[in-house]
Length: 389
Image (cartoon, rainbow, N blue to C red):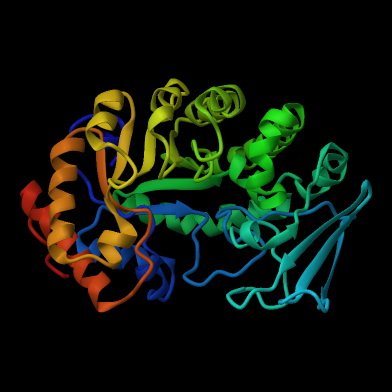
């Protein structure tokens, strides 16, 4: 894995699922999840802090260290059902020393959090009537929701991670940490539709929010990097050209991303950037920041030939197979074809094979396709299957 991340040619192009929700949920704990991947023959990695198979918290979509508020912050929640509204509306208010921040979220039938509104979650984006932050006047209060990790949280992280790191070192596994966050967080607290307009109408406001989140994120990065990880990962699913032109991306996102990469490199770690769609016009800009690996190269969203040509020798590519349509819904022949194509175009150096971005469904078809992917990869790379499948 490290050889691939260095854009060199390893003894075989590794296969490591960037996310494997179906197997994770079937595992009794995080160690069992790693062991089961190794038994399948995968080049598994470990992530700190370790994530249990079942997670439900206020920051579900920001994996990693806990998110704490200032001690003076209190929270209140209530539900309203207005005659002209088809679904109840959940109202959550964060009371801070600098004022209140309130969000209103529709409690749709597919809402998975009961009568509760989490702080950071993708479900908020399409269901929010009012987001937490409206404009510059809210930033003073918002700062009270973004405090650095406490001493107790750091100690808990070190304790939880120690056994995982020891396991990784004994088995020669890549150690990763994260997740970092940038514009994705603005989507949760301000809304992506508003963000698209604000980058033109209120650029100073967007830059201020971005800088605030970036500063908070790097304080969290420092804690994770101190564990001696090999690869730091930042989620950037929304930092693509659906929401930003290349010029805006270069002006608004690239400077903060460059700082993140420099911080990781100073700690001796590689830097991974998760962006799974609408990234083709950004490839050179991403490479300029020093990012070591783009995680999530989906063959249905990336031009594989052009991507390899632009980034060959500069940035490792992690992906190559579509996760939902091919792995979960497709036929085994389609899986094999995508694996072979990915290995031929993106390998053999600087490439890690993976479904993009997740295999969530634990169905007979999905599990058959997982087996097909692994067997095709082993056959194409001349490997022997593991002795204990």
